[in-house]
Length: 281
Length: 334
Image 1 (cartoon, rainbow over the protein chains, first blue to last red):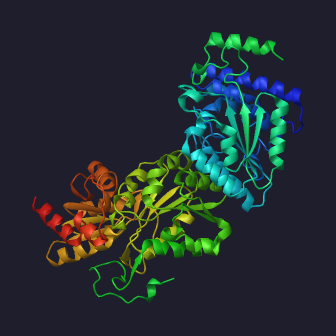
Image 2 (cartoon, rainbow over the protein chains, first blue to last red; image 1 turned 90 degrees about the vertical axis):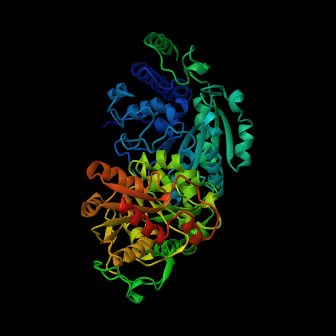
């Protein structure tokens, strides 16, 4: 399998181009599947693009490489985003993306690690990924590995109690090889997070739980890269990057629309969206 | 560590038992045997890590914790997080044992076990103590009487309930050599040694002390010793009764079960658990399709436990030797 453009450098132009291609793949596979989570896949697209195309050390042709950095998609409903970056970096053939959510496909509605190489752990039931990330981070410390763990959470997801159990565990065991990221797009299925059940003050909460907290614009490549670099330098504490994002980012008529949390684009919407993405950048 | 072979041979062995049984003279709680076995395993295997949720003194993982502080992780009172952390450690190539009370491990963290452990088929060993009503005075909140049912329903999960200390030690070693999620239920109360000295535990293999021509009791956990006492008396009274230790509840040893079922006219299951979903259900599900016959399930009849001494509680819920004898006599008259 070929490495398709993993770049360990801070090439912002390259990363922006990749993020746009990632968004195109997300929209195409969702429209073909006819169902799935559009909004939250698009909101985290820039962050996950930076991780897979620049920040993380990983080997798509050797998915179980012991020294790899790990990415845990705790917000498992953003599966299309994970599948897009895995395919584009060479974990499997990009043509497989069109099998999303189809019977027999390894591209399950939510990620399943038993059937798809590159998926570290099955997710989809919210609130569980941070605990798993802690366990991996502890294991890396036992083995004296310099590898790092990245965990992406949704903002609504932090309403789950287990997230805060895990927050305490990471701080207690001083997991400085762990960097979690909250995709703070402000919307969840039933409406704005602030109306469903508010989670603010987010930064103060994580800080009070003993984490190093960084706030960034989750669509600014420079800020994403800087945040991840800063996290790497923190000692004795886990880092939480609060990424301010826009749900549905990249497609004007999806942006900030709560109804596109769990709805796929129609074929007409896909055409319109692809035109928009084609014109931008 | 106490050794089985040091015990004196009992004269009260069940007739025709395949091996010698050293029984009666010494009692040991299966949780104590676990503490010892885990410590020994930790010495042999550096990949073993242990997690607990603030109950290491009761689950006996504290022995491991004291010997190997760098491989022991107290996750605090956070069972859901403990399961996830154990999963992560397994993903790092470790062999995690995660322990707490059975009701919290399987109940509080059930969906974490389903999603993160079983769906991903991770190599995590859940060894829970305080199974059943013999927890005693703490009452229903601390007595797991639904755990077997909750674990048995999960794909990829193996479910084991050892009957005594020696079997527990063998179980811990056997699951360490087996890949996949495993649930082991242990008890708080001391129980007599029941398994013969030459007994070898194998995952998925039941042990038939003997097969009766009138009735066979399929028992699990602490109920094995009680079933043996009942069978002895029944057999003396002319009702030929056998006992099977179904220590692996899942996968069920259907071969041994079928052999016992075909030999007799009555199967009685007995467990310190709800009659819904556990051993009684597993046996009934299999036999109703393969060899329909009369099966009587003994256990908690859709009820919670309560406070009392272990002995009082076994009596209260109809799980004594006298209850088994009465049940079998009544059922055979049907």
